[in-house]
Image 1 (tube, rainbow, N blue to C red):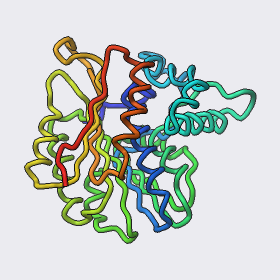
Image 2 (image 1 turned 180 degrees about the vertical axis):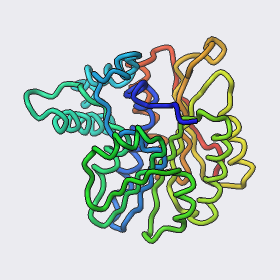
Image 3 (image 1 turned 120 degrees about the vertical axis):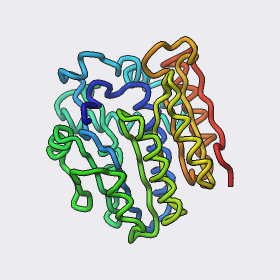
Image 4 (image 1 turned 90 degrees about the vertical axis):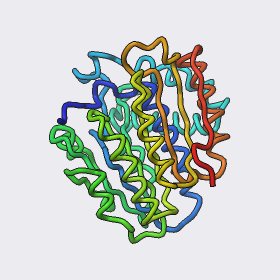
Length: 288
């Protein structure tokens, strides 16, 4: 079942949470010169025009990236991470539409964020199983050390372990269309922990009233994994949410030192812009 297309939700609050975490992690990894293998298991289209037919149906970006874009001048001065992220977002607009002053016209997906930190010594594999999404991704320009793969990202990643480079950074961002995906992601993380225990792995998960994300969280804890840090951006109390996401979660294995402090500050600013009634919660899910 491959019905999900992220274009309907591009630039929403969960994208902001996910890509700020990705940006913070990669920014830290770039402090060392040793090569990195990046793997994006559910790459999507790579870039999302905000005037696309799918995106215009829900316009979720208006409660996500748009308020941050509108307040970018003040936000740049108040938070270093958010300021750098917004500068990169400006670059994405200039690349998409070089003419005139940059305006918020596209939202860059994870392939864009990853290709823009890619150095000559690094490698990037972008997996996408959905045929239509992969077709869109195929139209995106990539550097020579990045590859698109039409296939199952979780299976592809497991077959590649261990990787040839000293470091591995993985983003796992499924649609969770199938309930089984929560357990499959947990099993994949367990495999990474066994074959590449120093890998930095970021897993996004939705916070839904059904609470299925607990399957993922409980299974990785039972697997005996260590150094798992969790960040949850909660828009509203789960008891008041009848359907749809009430929040966004990120689980990070082997988080860079200081990630918690950096993201706590940044997400507090985002909460003020996106959901004054919401909250950001973070901490170790499993410690060292």
